[in-house]
Length: 65
Image (cartoon, rainbow, N blue to C red; front, side, top):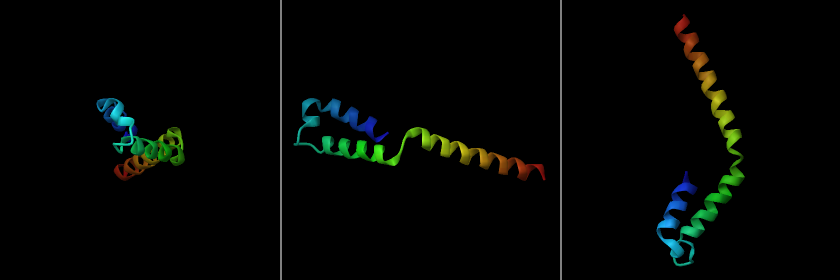
């Protein structure tokens, strides 16, 4: 999400968006690096899916009683 927002901000500012006069290029580089070190999106989606399935199972058990 941060990269999408930064991409739009850079486009709005045209060439100034990637110059050293604004912090946008620096923010974009940091956001991209963090995204790479945080792991692939697929890993996060799998983690979320497992969490939600566990939560749904617990809710159905709770209502089955």
